[in-house]
Image (cartoon, rainbow, N blue to C red; front, side, top):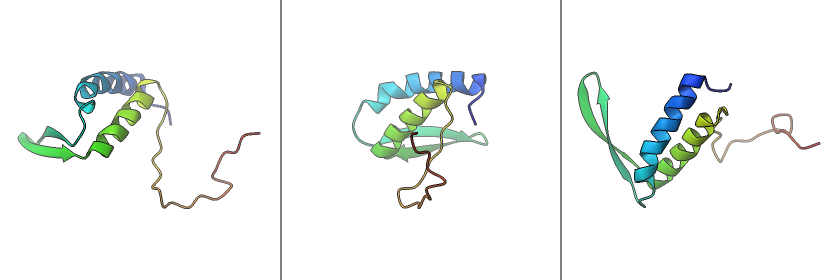
Amino acid sequence: MPPTALDAAMARISGEVLSRFARQKGPLMLRVRDGGKERPLELPDGAVAMLMEILEAIAAGRGVTLIPENAELTTVQIKLPD
């Protein structure tokens, strides 16, 4: 399902802000607010890179589906080129 215009705009802004920090190699330390409380959150380097790709796709209006590496797909689930 494609993202809404609001989701795309939020992803574009979030991606621009995050990109300044994503260029640094290594984990990224964030602070998240939950119910009025702030908590630290450390994201591994690979998760930051994946999040950047997800935000870029949403900002471009494309939906995103994540599939674990060990997932098994049938030929019916895979779209093959004509």
